[in-house]
Length: 111
Ligand code: FES
Image 1: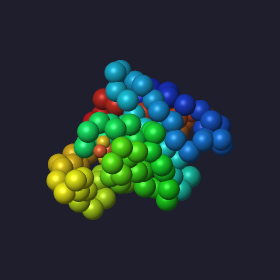
Image 2: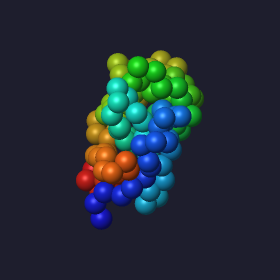
Image 3: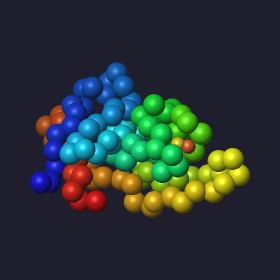
């Protein structure tokens, strides 16, 4: 199916992150350092919504137990320990993003 339009650039004048639902996937779209990134919205720990977390300096913090992820790649930062238990991180949690004519497009099939 390829790239699908999910947002307009102008929306990000007011916001820095947006929750996208595309083909039953929930995706966190962010603007970091002037570029746009898409990662799975689901925290690998216990499924927290990263959209509801805080985004600062390109790092998204899960609102449930505080695990931190690189908003550009979705990779976990450090070894998250929640209640002294480490949990497994998936490495590739990002989706390709491109901008065309003021629109932001995501390809969720390319994963
Ligand atoms: S659900 Fe995200 S840190 Fe626990």
